[in-house]
Amino acid sequence: MSEPSLNQTLLQFLLDGFRIPTKTWKETPGARTITDLLIELLAKESELRIIGGELFRVTKIVKMYILDGSNSHREHLIGEFEVKEGKTQKRNRHPSGKFKAGESPEQAFEREMKHELGLEPEQWSTHLGTTVTSEFCDSKSYPGLQTMYEIHHIGATLKAGTPPTLQDKFVFTEPDGTELHFRWPPFISED
Image 1: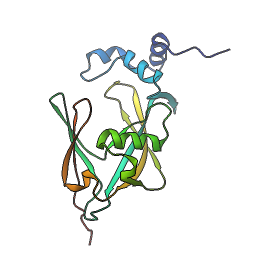
Image 2: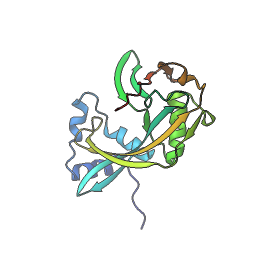
Image 3: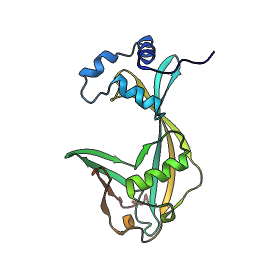
Image 4: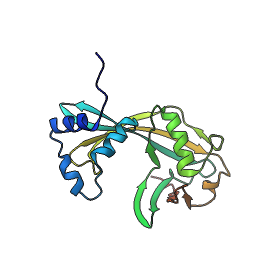
């Protein structure tokens, strides 16, 4: 017997069974809809898992730790804020992004380096090994449905002369017009 394919009715039944208050999603600012969740699940951008008897939305993230190979006096690159459609949102974190369906951690890293910084693989060297951690939080997109972020931490060193290494702060504009503002914090010795 084959498994039933996921549809909105089946998803609603599952969420109701775990007492996820989907009816409040429409009234919550910034919340998405059950249709949005269904699309996300069918595109395999996230999945649902039962952990300890509770339902979780699981999303894989690649978190990038980027060093400037030509300047050892800088810490890892930090995304300060983004400007999208005239609205500014603070980031103040390492560049990161969601996995796409079927991607390996390395493929997600390469795609995000190109997407967030406009860089090609020959412009960096990747540090060997990937560390994976998990973070749990309440979902702002789907209130009442907890999210587990499976975070793949990958490091890279940019080669000397690569455009982002030439200034302490810079802006990269994505194809949709979103401006990503980055900075290289100075390295502070603990001596």
